[in-house]
View 1 (tube, helix red, strand yellow):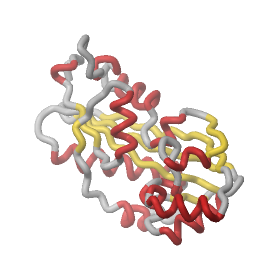
View 2 (cartoon, rainbow, N blue to C red):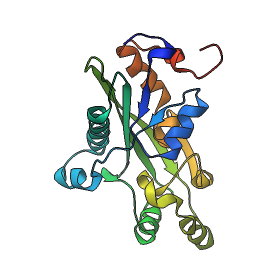
View 3 (cartoon, rainbow, N blue to C red):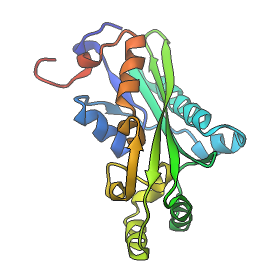
View 4 (tube, rainbow, N blue to C red):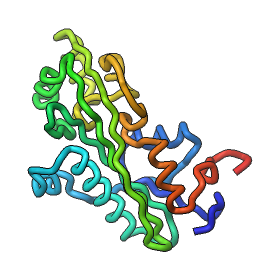
Length: 210
């Protein structure tokens, strides 16, 4: 694929508003195409997978699904995040009860947020993959804060049941590593993977000079 802004169709295979906002803030305006991957079925089929491995498998599945349905040359990026606490993987809670239980388990503890990345060049079939991991220390909440946070619905559809860039950020005590990994797409990791496919990061910038 030619490394010029005019020729690169950049597709984000994710419905995550946080991933989209992170890319936009970094100067990239992706086309969003949501995959039809059944995450729960994949997770169920890999009961013994390490959290980092599970994140990568899900990211790969999303990228492959969207790449298959994308016509014409494009760079397709699939991502998925899994929170690891005490060696166990935690994905999206889905319900308030599950999110509450997760938070109570996480209070004052340190876990690892793994975000898998799979980048596919549909023109050549080439791909590059990597999982980025960042250590996160969770704070505590008062019962009122917990009720109010759960009522927003924010923690139900994010890995581990918390966000760094949204309402949950105030309850995260510290982050050691790339913070964009916690948001759901590691910008340094993505830049390196694109370079492996001969795509220069700055060529994707949506600026007057590009």
